[in-house]
Figure (cartoon, rainbow, N blue to C red):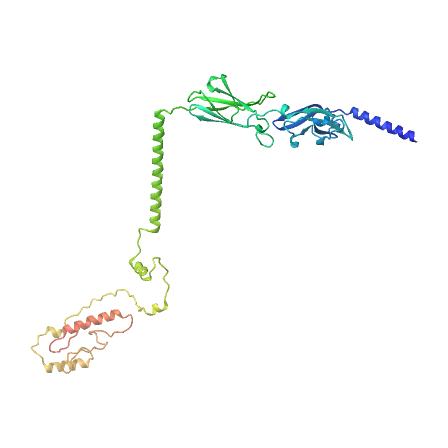
Length: 410
């Protein structure tokens, strides 16, 4: 039984070795670097059926640790059983001046391929990036070039890792074609000398590191026109333009101020004045704001009731002269007076006098020729009052000296 067990164990080990030998290892292992950003990538030929079962493992260790023969090095795993064929090493913050060993292998169904190792030194192998930014500014007839250092993965300047970093500045006149000039500098602000005034120049910058002969790609060209002495006609135009602008600004300001003044004056001090009785009321109340007049019951009691009537029609009265006035009389005749009184009293009509008095009595309404009709006194009998006043005036004028009887028709 023990022999059979050992036979089976031997068969299993041989099968495992065959499977491992058959599992292909990664190929074309390369590093993609820029400043302190590092990515390990590789290729692997696989069939479509194995695309979802194959994984990869990536590890690293300091190279100096491999020199200890008594103690096996401890590898640090960065990417464990990933499906993608790359691994980002930036997260482990490898020292820029250190030397490391990197390795990667293939895993499938519990088995794995042999390791593929690669040595990596960031200071030597990592690519150097171009300046982060380049800007130009005129300095008279020259140009100032402002250069921003390349930065690492922590957004810190690369001068912390490469103190001897410098720049190659290539510049040329834009109209001159390919005739270029070069200037080397380690400063971040450089003035390009001996340039023509009022001329367009283009500039591009490249980062360089001489120890390992590193150089970055060049930045995109930046172009700007130089300046020079300003001609007198430009100065005159600038001065004239500034005067026009100042005049327009003052005109607009005055117009706006006048409009605001007119608006405020019209709003708070209107041209229409209040009537005199409202002004008297405001002065009496001591307030400059009119208020609503509320009805007062006591004030209504103090007012007289006034009735407004239309203007009455004036009646014309024609008074024919009495016969007694037309006949001549030499003097008063007592007999004739009494005879007339007797004759008139029998008919209950006319006007007579008794006791030598001149008072007149109103006759009855049965007589056709009367002095005045009976009046009905009332609140609206204005016409009758007017007629009575006129009749009384006429009667006073027609009285004779002998107190004779005067008849009149109205």
